[in-house]
Image (cartoon, rainbow, N blue to C red; front, side, top):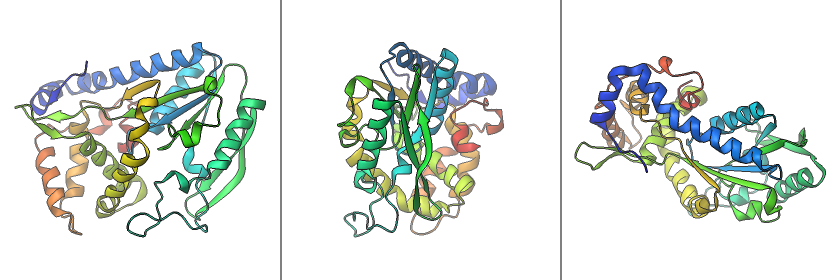
Amino acid sequence: MKENYTFGRINNLALASEKFLADSSKAYHEKIGETSSEIFSDHNKKIVMLAGPSSSGKTTTAKLLSESLNMLGGKAYTVSLDDFYLPRSIQYPLDENGEPDFECVEALDVELIHLSLQRLTESGKSAFPIFDFTTGERINNAKTIELRENDVIIVEGLHALNPIITDTLDESKLFRIYISVSSRVYENDGSVLLSKRDLRFIRRMVRDYKFRSMPVERTFEIWSSVMRGEDKYLFPFEGLADVKINSFHPCEPCIMSPMAIPLLQGVGGGFSEKADLLINKLKLFKNIDYSLLPENSLLREFTG
């Protein structure tokens, strides 16, 4: 049963900030431990498909699963489906606005995904590409992965649960994980204050600006396309997951607001109304310095 968090409750918990930060990570890390034990106990499972919407924490989850499996005596390799993007020199499918649709599954080299994973399960060894986002080109056979008895490969990406990706693979060797922000933050009267998508947008906006030098306006611009891709290519397959992980951290409005509010102030490009609405919501929360986050906190994927 999910716990409901109002901004009043969150601010009360934030009075003991370090304990609050530690407790906020507890349920997530426990779920990682349980999931890695379930994977490790079935030695037939070789491919872990990890899917989730934007800014759900897929990268950190893959890393922590890998570390947990290593501690159990196995080894986990991580591959991103983004590395299977078709070269940008190839004509991508177009969306309803006539723009290249980078969110659709057809933007990936599905045939190469099948080939690489089938070779891995059949022979225990396969080559994998790396996509260079600077040049827009894919480097084929960039790395080789070899699985031994207790080893697995974690394949993470928006389309990791899509049957188009998995339907040629041996079902007995697959383990599917879905991760997302699965909780909301409520007003004290029980109405929704910050939706799941609000929380993920705030994470992404901070990360885009901090690590990708992306203006906030650009994050606003692409967000509708991101949501459309999730609705069309991810959420219909959520129910296929063997395990669902909630990456919501109750402390995150307190952590993100000191970084998000300055970025939202003065936003232009027709997004000022949306920005002001988020500012007014985030101002309700007691600020906590992100430097107090535990080193292994999922939120550090977005704060640094």
